Length: 367
Image 1: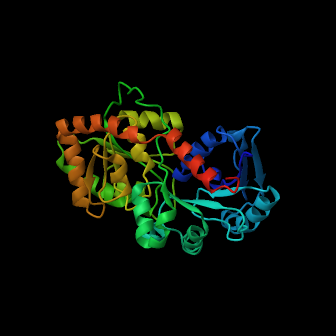
Image 2: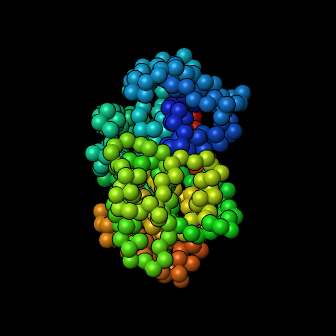
Image 3: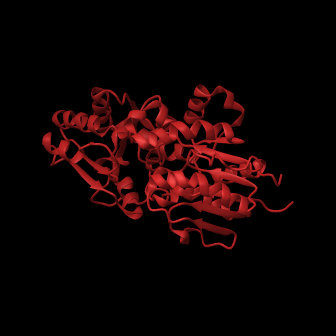
């Protein structure tokens, strides 16, 4: 049997710092080491040095606009796939090229159904593209990959006819296990990590934190890490208007080393997002033995397991109570910290990459 020729939509690699970038990079890097010939397709430039291997081939169109890239990828990818005589096509980002030859099997990864559940938290063009392409892509694919059991159940509930196609390949943490805490920063603050956009629920968190500061005898700081997304979130302005400048700080984007240290020194991660398909910051926090305050009935609850205090993301009172409990109940904090180091053992990039490679081979026309 000849080794498979696998095409991949690597548009996520154009946007470092996002969860979908991390998932694509970590799994793809490992799969390229497992064999096969890999054809990486993108309408926009990305860092090709991430994949300097003899079995990796790059095709880049150089389209400047992100929106036009999504449209033109629908045209370029089927042509490239035919020219490269690929045996299977994988999209790690929700959308398959609808003009892909029916002779080429395809696999699509679904990171979330945010366009369906919380479409108002998306930019309008992105929501329209997802609404049109995602259901068609799932119908077209031989296998549909969910990044959590939560997401798999959501897909199955909305599209029960897809149940036999569904597989789960989870994310993990890329950080070194249990980075040593710094003497001056150990367990001194609450940490939020994520893009600043409406779905992350930052205004409710900050208002709940205001009440926490007013009522806690020794309140811990709040550090907010992540790049600016879209929407009028107004995080820095809200912090100033609530007179929280002494306690809450927007750090913005940081490098990998600094991010790891921020996790290691945190008292707890606080992530009351309205909706996530997995919640990578939860896994990253667990990898440092740091417990979590996160939303109940969510993918984050699944990832955190028994290492979290669960809150209602729509209730400032509930978020406030979570912050207080994590601060004053030292026995609970200690127990959750211990559980964090145990829960993260369920997630491993190597395991996920092997599982994904097996699925691609099973769907490939070389089988």
